[in-house]
Length: 261
Image (cartoon, rainbow, N blue to C red; front, side, top):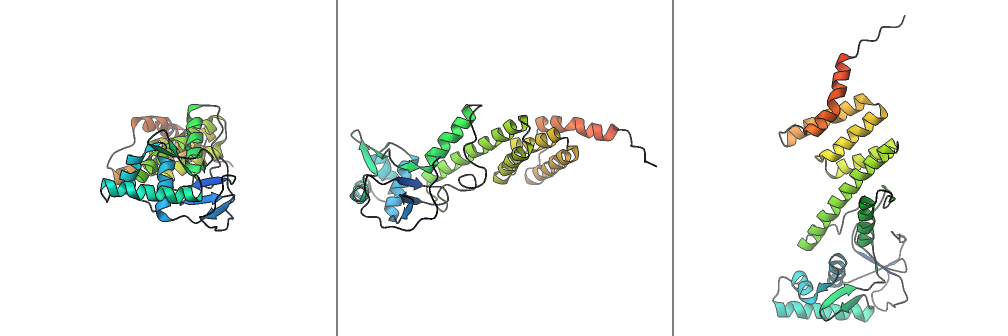
């Protein structure tokens, strides 16, 4: 993923040129950056650009009906045409593809697409590197916070699930490599996102057991067991219970250690 300098100055919306580097940020809030400077964008334009970033190659009818659902079809079409005129007056950010489809120009960098592509590659290719550092956006960020449109909520949940699967996979792979501290960090980050997620809780237990920290593994299991009982009234799955059970038996059957003199 290409990182853009966050130390940017606000710039005007009008007068963008095709030679400038255009980047759309959707994590931690909407931002359009031009040559690393933040550009102030009108609200209707923000919604159109964000929609096309999340729904590439949408038809004009779908875009208009989704973004202006509170008005009739004719009015929604007029609102879309007006917004497209404002966008393309400043820069050719939106392109018409074919007869009836809209898409952002290929030159626009989009953090959401970069991250989802890297995350998907990491899951599909065992040898792939981690998408980005665990610390900082988008791992610690949210997709368009404060936006509650259905089309945003769907993609936000998709991103959250992809994020959780990447963290689960990362923890498993790092544990197998003996990189226990980072493996535990990934598992705990998944738990922070979803405390009841058993695959993440299982990874925490696995890391502790791999390190030989049996007491830590048992403590993590007991904390999760109590949480599940409190929240859902159910026990952990048989998979997790079978993982930790031998160590409970070991603790109970180990002979006492003779006191040293």
